[in-house]
Structures are given as C-alpha cells and as structure tokens.
Image (tube, rainbow, N blue to C red; front, side, top):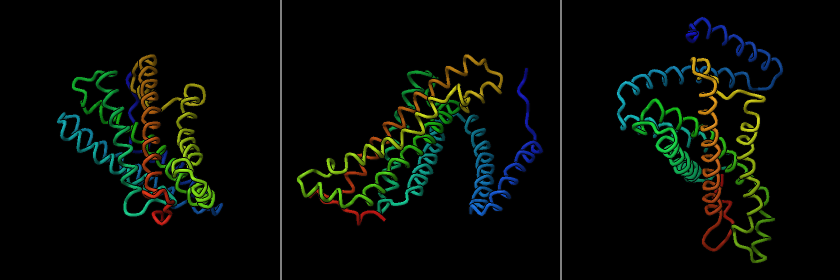
Length: 263
C-alpha cells in the first residue's frame, strides 16, 4: 500500500488543534499562548524551508554542501544551548563550550555510525548523513544544555559550599564534583527515559516515519535501535566534555571559584 499523501488542508486542520490549545492556555493565564503559536509557526516555516534545501542537497550529492548544512545545524544548536542557560558563561564561552562539545561528540559518533555501521557509500551521502546528524544533534543539544545549565546554577547557589571546600584544601574539580555528577545525571535522564519507554509507551519518530513510508517494521526497528544507541553515546560524550570544560572555566589557575565569569 503506498503512503498516504497529506494536503495543505490536512495540515491546516491539524494547526487548528494548536490554535485551540493556545486559546485555552491564554484563558488559564499561563503566559505561554504567544510562545506556543510562534513556536508552531517557526516549526512549520523552518521545516518547509529545510524540505526545499534537502531536495536540492539530495540532488547535488556534493560533500561540500553537506558540510555547509552540517555547519549551519551545529551553529544553530550551539546558539540554542547558550540561550537555554539561565546563568551562562560570559564572553561567548557558553556558546563555544556547547558547540565544541556537540561537534566532537555528535560528528564523531555520526561518522562512525555512517561509515562503519550503516556503511553508506559514500559515508557522507546526504540522504543518510543529514538525518542521522540531525537526530544526534537535536538530542545532544538538549542533554548538553541541561547539564551545563544545572552545573552553572548549582555553582552559583552553592558557592559557599564550594569555597568552604576550597579552604579545606580541595581542588576546584573536587569541590564541585558532586554538582558535576548531578548535572550529568540531569542531562542523561531524558535519554534514558526515552530509550526505556521506546516500544512500550511510544513509537520513536524515525521508526514511525519509516513504517508510514511503507518500509518493513522489522527493518524500521533495527534502524531505530541503531539510532538510539548512537544518540545515547553522543549525548553522554557531549555532556562529559561540556561539563569538564565548564568546570575548568569556573575556576582560575589558582583554583579560585570565578562566579564573575557567569551572568
């Protein structure tokens, strides 16, 4: 059976549900109605533009266009990581650390998955590389943002505890170690919950999309398992690197806590 095509009218009808939700949110005075509508419009516009870009990208097959697309995705993810932090490092360090951690983790894991596991030929084939990198970056972005935000907030709120530990002779890494562990734990929770619920509570998006497109469920399951394993690895490596770099930035060379580097 061929996949069912969706019309513009179908999408408009689905959008009325979000509009109805926004009305209820406004009536409840949650202060989120405008943000909900703006996010929905942004999502629709951005995905429509990406669809046109991907169509051209798939037709060209050039590795340089793939690299450009990946760079734009990485920079956008880095901006989101910095924007989601209540207290972030000054001077662009929040953006730099988040972007660098995602680059090392997501790109390395994506290349490994495409070249060794999926065995795409070539490994940068746009039809494989862009979706895989997008899924890894999206999840790693959330994990890195949560972990850095939790670490910075804990350092700010627990500065007396950290400074007392420093006075007792601990290094900066030792003084903030328990806060770092909690930051990593908070970033891992969404990934662990999503993997634990997959198949029982929810059907992941990639698997659902492949099934709706007419692929065999067993093949869709294998691809989804692979993607979730890569996502878990990318999130974990990205968080570890981001928290490590953030801790180093929070202390100077004399092991003093530098909260003036936060804003």
